[in-house]
Image (cartoon, rainbow, N blue to C red; front, side, top):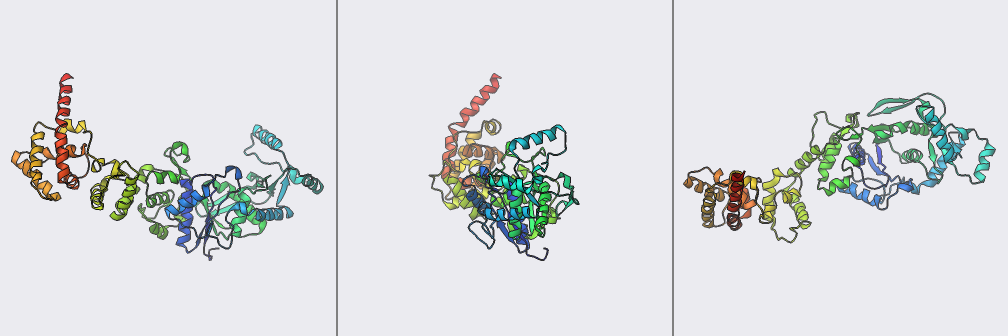
Length: 498
């Protein structure tokens, strides 16, 4: 198999959203295929009709397209081994199940649900390590089996696990894993409704679709012995297996929706960049020898290898995801951020503002080191889009002095004399006022900031003033001078009363 161009698949069930664990599985398969000149196939495992969610397939494909994981074969991109929906391959599974029965590697089981429940409870009372089917129907005579089938008695098809050597899995991630046959149950292969279980459909499809490497989550490791027995029963060559580590919460419990968002769509809706999400997910169980942390998709294709996938579970650290998102945002071209910011503005309360690109680009540059998400250009600096309606009293209490009104009045007097002032002009004018008043520039900087933005933090004050522009700065300072002295007086009064 090592001489073949790899063919790998991502085979999700259409049960709703795409879990971030599913995204990682898809990503690792995609990276392995692209790194080695192979094919990445999307197969929809929709044989469990009770769990099927309408629209889930379209949502899944849309999500894969959003993150940039384009499949080579799959729905709407037919190759030579389709169809790619398992529900459209039922005749194939039936034929292969009949083949297994004919060779004694599977058998029809007519046991009722009540008997199976009673059997399981009996084994549990006996404290057996694992509940297993007792092979009762394997020993039915040919006549009994045919009679049951003729009468239309409900039945399933089970794998016949025979005695023999231990089943060995040579796994790229797990190395050698060994299972004794006495822990392998006679797994159901075909259900009473005629649909296959995951186990039969998975093996048959992987073989017929030429899958060379099965890259999937660790939770499937215990099912792999059953799959190997099926490969052996059909006389098929085994694929190479690689079972990926579990994704864990900070408390090392399995990642679940109970403790936070697990759907890719949730992170998209929150404003995470697709590049950042892929970068972060790639690091959930894999690293380079240099322990690098910043990658784009091309970097990942170049550097990825299954041999560098870890065995231990990977902690899903949202703080690290936020950091990675901020890093990717800062490395984007400003014109790309501009277009994303326009989208955010169009969906905000500022949608009716007519803002020039030049103005928005100045905001992007000034706030770049202070945001992790595009939406934070709005959330963290609303003063660029509306005049402040309140003023931070903590800043006023600490920074607003008895001479603040006089200093700010002198500052706007100097600004009023300037024609289209540059950022440097705002700075020169402020320092001139400070020099004339024989005080430090900070004596004016902090009152000017809170007067124009309403808060005490933000970009450099000269960036703030320049972006707002002379006329707007003068209006805002004049507005503030009507309100802030009263706030300061109230604060002082409260201090005296206490």
